[in-house]
Image 1 (cartoon, rainbow, N blue to C red):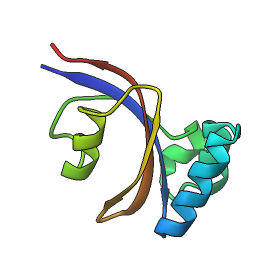
Image 2 (cartoon, helix red, strand yellow):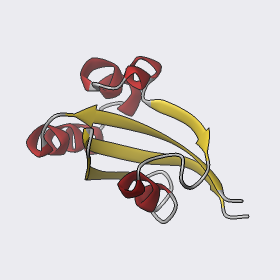
Image 3 (spheres, helix red, strand yellow):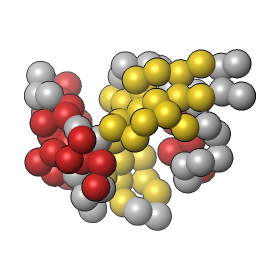
Length: 94
């Protein structure tokens, strides 16, 4: 079964999400931005979500994590929780 590891930043608006993505793409550290801005408890660990399989996260999140490019910051991705920036840190497709 495929497994992936990712980290994310959860915020309340698409604008805030885009602003944080620009900061990261300009050289800001993903983990630092997560600690400062993420509304998810995982933010205190730099946004790390550990390892998971398809179906353990909401559909919109799964679609990005199991098909997106590794090491790239994806988003904004809207879910019922808000807007996410997602970085896929590891994935196996077995």
